[in-house]
Structures are given as structure tokens and as C-alpha cells.
Amino acid sequence: MKRPQKPLSPSLPLVAMGDIAFLLLVFFLVTTALDQSRKLEIEIPSARKVVPVPQEEIFSVFVDRDGKIYYKGSEKNLMELQFLYRRHAAIFRKPIVQVIADKNLEFEKIDEIIKVLRRNQPIRVSFVCREENP
Image (tube, rainbow, N blue to C red):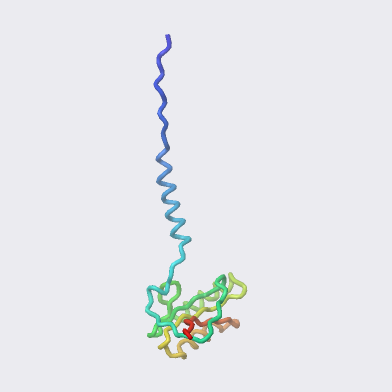
């Protein structure tokens, strides 16, 4: 005589769901581009003509009105900035230094940054500005 078998109920393996959720969270944190200019109060100057720059090899340097230098959201001194640029230049063939500086900042501070970055090699520099309305 056979025993009656209980019908099997479908089930989902819930153990792996936590791992998948964590991996998705890490993926989105790593791939999300952060807008660094929101944290800093930088009043960007305007210009008559604005030329777009390719974004692939950009090395962005933010300078506030007090002359403090920021790279990727954290304050850096000139030597740290030079080290970070050398590392960036080793990865990319033709890097472009993008300077985002407050319009009230003295140009001598920007010139000092450029001189430090080009100590070992010539550099390409782009200054960020807003286009003037006609």
C-alpha cells in the first residue's frame, strides 16, 4: 500500500536575495557619478564663447574663492595634487586639466597650480566658464 504524497509547494531561495541586493547596492554606489560642484560654493565666470571639451581624460581641479584646492570632493595641497595628476597622466595619454575656479579668485593662485602640474611635462588646460547671454 502506497502512502499518499503531499503536494510540493513552490519555494524561492531567499538566502541569495540578500547577496544580490548588496551587490546591486555596491554596483550603484561605484558607478554613480558624483557632482562635486554642488558641495563647493564657486561662482563660475562667464565668457562670450564656450568650447566643449571631451570628458574622457579630464582631471578636474576645483578652487574656491579662498584659494583652497579640491580634487574629487576633498581638499588637497599642491604636492598631493601633483601626485594625483602624475597618476592620472600615467593612465591617460593626453589628459586635460580642467580648472573650475571662483571668478573672484586671483589668477596668481591658478597660475601656481598650473606651474606645479606642469613641472615634469607639458599639460593641456581648460578653464570652466558660463556662456554669456547675448
